[in-house]
Amino acid sequence: MNFQERKKLILAAIRQAGSLTVFQLAEKLGTSTATIRRDLHDISAEGLLLRTHGGAMQPDMQPLTAFIEKAGVRDSEKDRIARLAAGFVQEGDTLFLDCGSTVYKMCRYLKGVDNIRIVTNSIPVLAAFVDAPGIQINLVGGEIDKKRLAAHGLKAIEHISSYHADKAFIGVDGISPETGLTAHSEHEASITSAFIAHARENFLLCDSSKIGRDSYLRFAGVEVITTLVTDSEADVTSRQHLTEKGVRILLA
Image 1: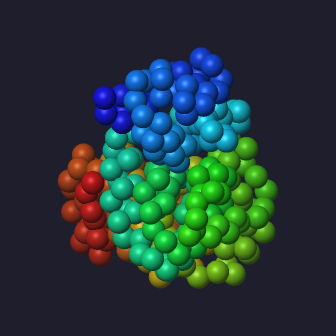
Image 2: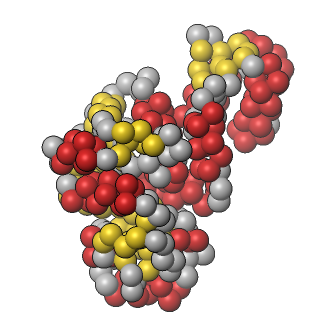
């Protein structure tokens, strides 16, 4: 039985029981406790369950559950993008991570990198790293958007402006060669702009559905992006025009 099969069974069992111990799960799945512990570590990094002393339980935060459900849209594409992007993080880096669902998926791949600092406005990102040794977390303050589970507003922008990051990993609602980067709201656009302005390199993580698409608010040109990480289904013409504008594109 591979990890994905065990993951489905573990989540179903915990959903039914509310909480289970490592030993109970090992008995249900007919596998070792060591395997269950590794699986719980990986599944909790995705925010799909909460670790307890000796086991795991269902998340009891409804907004977090909603966020995870959003992160599950185009799940395989987002996961490949996140894995590829995480490969650019080096020991000692300071990172900006925004509240995007694809950026969130980087968390499980960053836990193996030692001595990194993460500045984020995302509560799910905070939750993913709160027990991770070797990773320092700096949570951006400000008003909390309960739908996005993220801080925003003037205070949040001032907070971000106090720091400098080696790399920023951000998401957008749309990117096109003609219009640039677009967002659904001024709140999200202002936070993303602050991250971009104070990072040495800017990595844009977005699946192919957002390439060539324009959203409500234009907030930056494509020249602010160092690297675009997307999937292979991204529109070829848009990719070519973005490359001509100096954007490095990596396909996951």
